[in-house]
Image 1 (cartoon, rainbow, N blue to C red):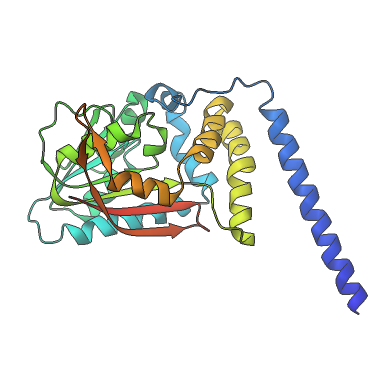
Image 2 (image 1 turned 60 degrees about the vertical axis):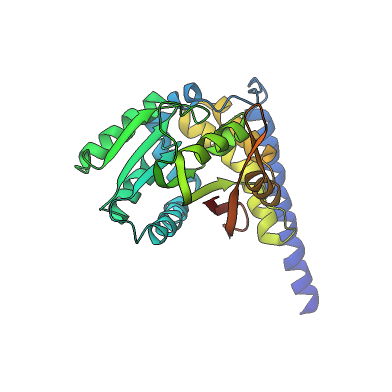
Length: 283
């Protein structure tokens, strides 16, 4: 009986090793002829190429769990602005307006400005806003996260950024701009991927899935393998949650290295530590 159990375990282990080998080999072959994207590849131009399929690809790759991750962030913001009569909310890297729409429905008394550097993504979002008849509550505009100069300082009561800060080459510049346009004491939530740091079995599997499965599926579904090679690299190169939290708490902005701070109120780990929700307060 014991021998049979050992044989089953050995067979399962060999099967898992074979699957892993095939996935890694497929990843290598699939991206063999793809030019490696530069570190600043995650621009609006990149997302313009995949905008029409972006929502569908997200749902497939995340097994629709991304909807729950965004909902968690939106509910957190809603709790923080509950005492404000008509909160003004900012959604950076709004993309196809998933978060902007959720914010407007969760906080119907507020208004939402969604900003993104991809016009094609915004066009998809604008149509979704029209379909929901929320044009009077949600405004979507083109903008680079590193330059909100047309926005007045201390304007917004809360801000969100879902899976966007990873794609900004100069993260400190973007964070300084966000800090500038938020009111003191307002909430700022970032939802982002990172490679799991823990060595637990499920964490290791999540890391393997992100590194070897997601790029292939994304490349096949979108027809844009270089874009999903960037996804793989940008997640791998993103700071650990502890490092990114420290960056937010000790920003140096402008030529004079003016210190601006976000107080880290909570770090919520999700999906086996591959997704983080950073809940902060603008100091």
